[in-house]
Length: 356
Length: 159
Figure 1: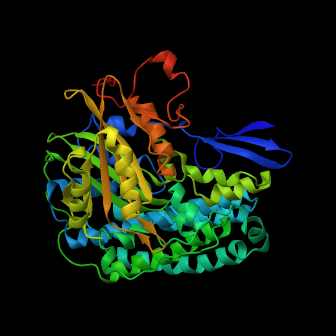
Figure 2 (figure 1 turned 90 degrees about the horizontal axis):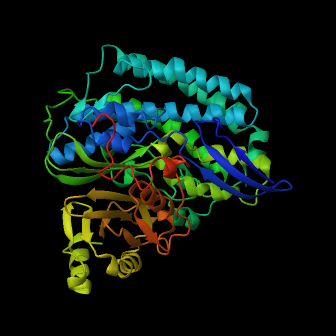
Figure 3 (figure 1 turned 30 degrees about the vertical axis):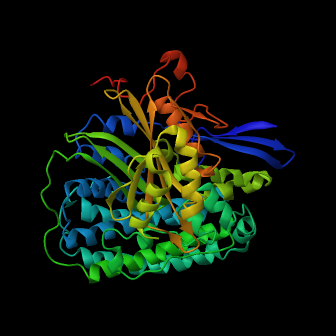
């Protein structure tokens, strides 16, 4: 039997999976992206460098900071400017906040996919009230704040934000324990994800998957450690790795990352240097090419930028983590239909990011 | 793995068959190679330096020079993570007959990237198993026959 899952919003944006079934076994699962293609790369060639910041962050609305950071880092490298240390720390804070936001979104959708509606309500509630509110206090908008710009960040941190964030994170720590109790330690969740969709280490590298999907397969691949950017080399944090390669270990990677991200934010606030939060940049960017990499919530995001010396990019290519995780859908082959939702969610696939 | 060593070794081994390897900055090496020598070079860098992980494949359009450039970004992934070095292979492709060998036999992970480049630039990857519509609408060919959105001669309405 052949049928489609989607394209009307199977969980995180318009996207279709073409499933071929025999009895209850999935013979073939082919992803069919492109329903939300907005040709960001083409439009970017017609706009000035700064105008592109709000444009490119629309390719991944749940994790906007890392996308804009990769782009800003590329421009800064071409311009040859040094970003002030205070801005680097603020960037780390925003990137980790947006990582938590993205993982909370993922967790909520995962909950509803497995029929656990409390797990849908809690993370969405916490995300909206705690994390996006903190982002709003810092950047002036909840989700798409265009806060990281070439040369630094748009505004300095407001007064009292440190206390507010610490209070938020204290509460969030308690919530994480509750998430663990009702969801990650839940025997039903374990039975539905353990041993389901196993991706071996060598296969993960061969298919080129990235992010938590890679780290759930026993590879310690994280750009924050391997090729540090912003202020990550001055902060102390660990990279969670699980070697089982199943849906459960991929989920645990993201769960532990939320805790680690909170600790990174705390450290960044403790060590926040004084000084400028941005430097002046020029509108014309010198000729050249640059390849900048960051670790976004779903994995490595690379920005390949080619400048011809004018005010607009000649070519901007974003290699996004969800696009690179597309081969992961082959994990569904041979599984039962009921295993499809946990595998789909454990890949944390985000259609907007793939289609750009 | 020293970057200067890699550059020397590539120059010794391939000589005239590739362009001069260039070090853009720390961890970034760029090599230009004609498509006839692409498979040889790709096999060599994979076997010698163990660059087992393809990060991205991009196309660039240069209409004045009558060429496309296909760009592969490669790096090494081990159990302990990425190696920070990124090797860039640039393959110039004639704009009239845009064909180049697919590297899918060497890096499985280029499959979707090459398919995207085929769709948006119209560059044929020889040996790719599945060059089919990916991001664009399936009726694209009827509405815009022989047009490829990321080419420079495809103009947006407000341009």
